[in-house]
Length: 318
Image (tube, rainbow, N blue to C red):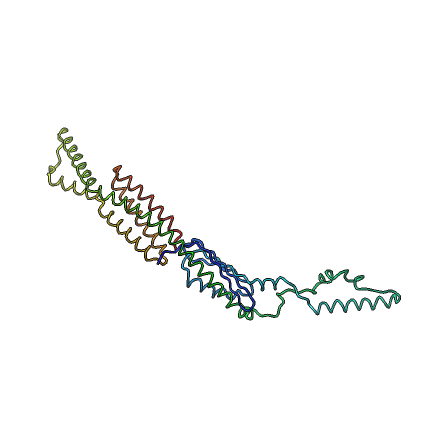
């Protein structure tokens, strides 16, 4: 199973009972699973179920979901006639006309003289038009009508997201393995130079101690109880041990092997890989602190740069 990226896009479309349902999903980097869901207001009760579906398929990332039902939105944006209001205004006109005709029997009175001059003006009268919010359809009825369509569109969008994440994950895996090869080369170079460096350090300590003893003799300074040769060798061995890098090299090798194993294992390994990068960085720091030789410093610097590149890449791994 390949590793998966956290960056992806998915689109799902489903038709059912004359309705079309759309779902769009965008995912970005995040330490945890952070989900934002945009549903039509009348279907907000579906949010918990949608969140459960997302958790079943995605483990990390900033996930934004957008749902759309064009026919439902169009219906909500188009007004309908309120028959009671229309009858009310017609009765009102008749009443006004009756009153005016009694006052002036020889005059002819029309609607546009006293109420409106056109149909559009009539629609502007308060209450003549009503919008979908005043519909008698209950939220549960809407949920039952649209639930299956929305969830089907969601399933299709999530499948696209998973495919996109795996595809990008394959590209990331190639990049990570390339950087790991660089780390292994530098690691191997240090191993090959370690015996010579160890001998060089040992010889350096011997020379420094000999110089110190010669200085004491020239100044006629004597140690309180003498300084036996076997004690000198013991002290040199202790100092050499402090500069030994065998353990660090072994642990670094182990971390590299585990990194490869996690990549090939796939699944959600982003956090594990980040931890391994921290461990590799710690071992490399110890190496650079123990050995200050130029030929080793060049390798440890390259190792630090490579591990930093690994860390940047895995920030996008689920």
